[in-house]
Length: 144
Image (cartoon, helix red, strand yellow):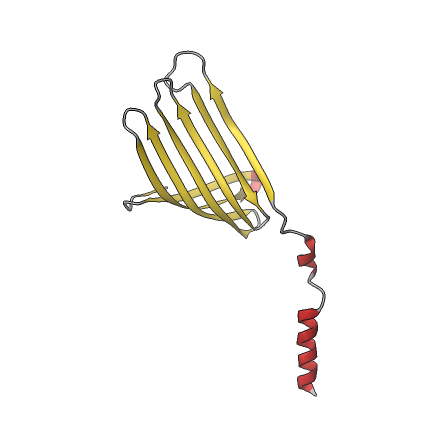
């Protein structure tokens, strides 16, 4: 008799209505993009154009972030830093991020350096945005 009650209870839990948290429709895909710096200087300077952009696509718990920052000069020289990161919510307002960073310096001699990125991003008390990253190059060099 007790086995039947247990079996019916298990079937009832598995086939019953979904919990309230699953009915919040929190699996929607959203996007965000921000251009926080876009500068152009028409005078004769070394780096007349600079930009800083970031954004993400994903849901409430997992996202793919992109970041790009660069400076481009009149003489065909410049530098670009681009990142693509997988982000997972680990606590309210805090994400653990892992991905790749690519540094490119071009001009007379071009240099490209790929890096592995691991970091923590979040919102601290009093609305301070915090980002802390560790980067590892293919040669084993570590930077933070």
